Image (tube, rainbow, N blue to C red):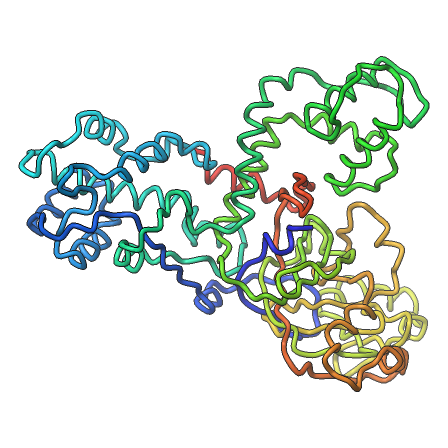
Length: 528
């Protein structure tokens, strides 16, 4: 899944504390590991025509809603000795018209056009262009274009403000565009309007946004049926509707209008199931019908939300890392920017949400103790102990001072191994004895930590550069019944992300359920 390479991000880390329970997070953590991007520019290289520096405060006085970029305007033009950026001896440069066109069509970028300010003024200035450096509207046009450029960059390249994403509990350090460095290096010749500094997944979703907007007027029906399932060999008038919808969504290349559930439809259903994260049975059940009946309008909103999340992702990330996408219930291993393998994971329940953040796995604990968190001990273990005096013995537990812990063994809640990346959220990856949960479609069962479906495989992958740790040694350590901690020779970055829509490696548009109900809050922020 291209999600892996396409959706990763820079962030903050985890603590090897005993608890798997999510905790409130301190914004101060986000001051670390900030990525600054220098956006190279498109402006005029002329140095002879300039204006007086006092024109900037005059401009801000007339257009006070630009006050927040006043300092950027001053620094930018000071670095250019107040020479015009959008004009040369031939008049307004071509890129000014390009910018204007981009702004008029900003909805193509998934941005609500109503957010943009002073659009009428911009239109008046552009539709009555300056023809001479002596024109009375020259400076106003010059400064308006730069201000609009910064506004465009903010919404398209950066997204909502960091404090707003923090309110959504997005604790991955955000991409930072330095406008001053950006506008200070404008003569490279690269057109950032054509090649904006946005992560690849953004472009892929943008392409689907355009396609889905064209499909929306065609989405005029819902599949209504009381039949529990349809499978190959069945026939029904409802099947014609199913084919029509799958053809509309691109899961079928040809709609023959037949009432028969044929092999072509079976393959299309499997492809649709794959895109929705469902078991690829080729059988249409209630769950598939519900997904098919989600209006394209809602899917567009889902695309918009995840385009916004993609704006936050730094372009330059490690080439070797692990990524967990919470709504996908998957962990992916990336090496040299290529997907190596993926495995199922179990994440936190809605009341124990797994935190969106990152860190570096520093060590592995084989045959771990499970130090039961105070909240679980208080709410679950102690009441059970009161009901049954033999509860601790039955579950291979013991007192450790004023805490209760579970001893190493096959029934330990952490399984046979855990993977620790120090963080303040008390979250880590770990094995589990409850293997059957990995077969579920929706895998949100934990107290916040992430259970991995193939713990031995992950341990082997992380220790592959250590010749001592072959498969036999790992197997022995996992089953030794005695806790042993192994420090990795090189820490491995791990990113815990939250994307409910992305484009896969095969070019397919994937959707997942918003298990923590985060999409609507973000949608309300970006579409007001």
